[in-house]
Length: 293
Image (cartoon, rainbow, N blue to C red; front, side):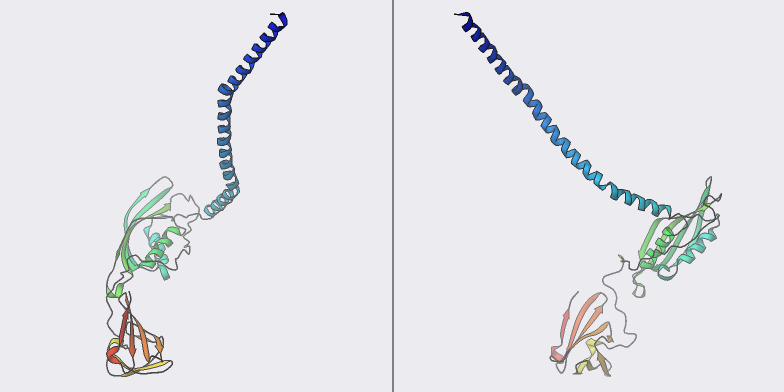
């Protein structure tokens, strides 16, 4: 074998080794690293997107923080001037008016002193409409003087003339100033009344009131005649009565008149059970009663 051929073979072998070695290095060492790097890039991109979303919310959060800070900075509470419980009673008397009115009694429990302030502990019991009681509590807690309400107990009064009313009891802690920490006492009452309050204690089915005003009892009356806007009937006492749509009757009102059918319909509320009573002229035996709860 000539020297040139031998060198060519050696060069080919060396070249083959380089190619095979390079491929093996890339496949077995570089490729896994590239896959790991690609996975890291994907995770990093996801994290970047999440952080970017949070960063986009920063201006809105800054505005909310400024508004909240402004609200709390301008809604300072006040302390009673001393430990005299009459100050608290006078405040409750001023609170308990209008749609926050309830009848209440006030009993002193004890007084605790600290370095710069003290706490008067009391028990308040009373009676009133549930919505008024809720407004009473709101006025106490949200007005200027610092009061803490706890241990609230509410019991409904399920009596005919007292539906919607409750008996209540709660503990009241009122904070007073011992060293003029907050300056002169400010006992301002803020208007925090609620226009409409749902009463969870109001019974769905209630007793029916007696007919004290001697209104027309539809179920014991006879429809005699009807016009486009009036009806004429004999009531439970045999007295002629004239009614128009919307007029009040015992437990309800005259809701509609149908001159073509010769009927008058009444909507009655029998202690939470709503009934529709229809009377027809000269057809007493076929009076139609439709009830719906």
